[in-house]
Figure (cartoon, rainbow, N blue to C red):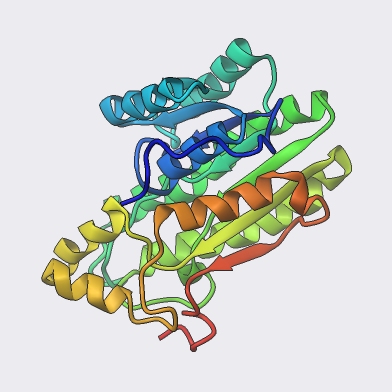
Length: 266
């Protein structure tokens, strides 16, 4: 277990405002807490209102600034409202972390059209909609940073995850295209490619595959570092990409996978 009351860091995001999607749990929640501890004001955007508000309260209890916005990343009205409420509360938007994502574990043959559309809506269209609303706001204040959550399975592919792999491959290339288009506006765009991470989504996959949870988690840990990632591991990568430490990094996929891809992705 990580320390929920970990002390604040040195404040490397002081003066920055961050909007994080999928912020109620997993990687998004860990990143929201970390960014707040690094002195950013944080907007948490998620459909899960109870968990999202609880995460915001945790930030506030630690002395940070947090705003929860309920919404669906796949709906333009909600994306627009998330950006507008963030700017209304904090006056600017410096960092967008497009992290919300879902998975369906099936081959192409076994994937329903409804599942295909929903995964693409959340994982790809959500990045598009939030970025489309955020870029003009960032450009007006001199620039910003967009970090997208892709996946190692957007780079090497995986079994029985056809639509997920397709969606994350799209995010990886959308990241590169956006980096090219918006570099002149001083907006850096990068993506994180996590390996298996101990989140509710990873655990839900066991049920989709019909696997016992303990065996599923054991298989997920079969990488050179011999463990699954913690959400905090991915949050640290997001912090690097959001901060001035990566000031000349744009259009890059940052692999955070315990050596999975180095070992041939199998």
